Length: 137
Image 1 (cartoon, rainbow, N blue to C red):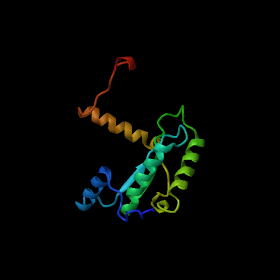
Image 2: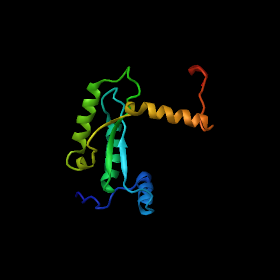
Image 3: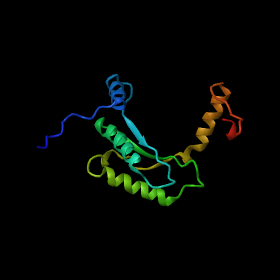
């Protein structure tokens, strides 16, 4: 005999942290993100992350950004960007499609800002430039 699934939302440590932040009024709106690298097709691990991030956004009346981590232009291709967008839309269709942001984001769009932040952290003594060769670390 098959029993009915529970009507309660799934619980895990990530959702518990978000629930605490929401209860404390720490943020105005929950915005999550799914940040794939556009250098290949999605796999089952990506599906888990999609379900987690879109699920948390859905459970909290938030939004989820599709933010491509396009930091290695040698291995990236628009074919993968288009494939990932189609796969995400297919996976969330009917249950979380309304929490997907209207546009995709790309890390490369704000490289200059990220560089400026890194320089400031170095100037503030909160980061440093590693000069070791790859074999040394």
